[in-house]
Amino acid sequence: MPNSALFSFGYGLSYTTFAYSDVKVSVSSVSVAALSEGRNAHPVHATATVTNTGRRRGTEIVQCYVRIRGASVEQPVRSLRGFQRLTLDPGESKSIDFPLGFDELSFFNAQSRRVIEPADYTVFVGGSSTVAQSADFQTTAVLPKSN
Image (tube, rainbow, N blue to C red; front, side):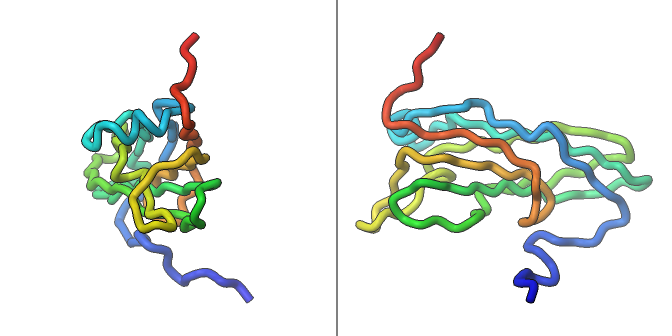
């Protein structure tokens, strides 16, 4: 038996269609200290290009989901960490940016404290919770070495 919802979270009907491309993160590695010291700092940025591929002006709710693998506490497959409303004319493209910091990348550990641990992160950007385009980065215990 299939085990999926008839309509995914974020699914919606529109008079136009949208395409997503160039999903990227600004860093491949970031230290836990950099994410934890400044609670208002956003050292990671997830970006994507959204294009209206239809023949009518339309509005899309662009969603950003985060998956954390390797944490001390099991995490959801995807957690919604941001969204933005974007209106585009036919054929128009825009780049969208999701700043990610402590609030977006932390989770509650076994002691019920919000923490960021060394782990692997995947960021998904798209129009619903079943989006496939993603980019990866990791958090490390020490600062990444610069070349």
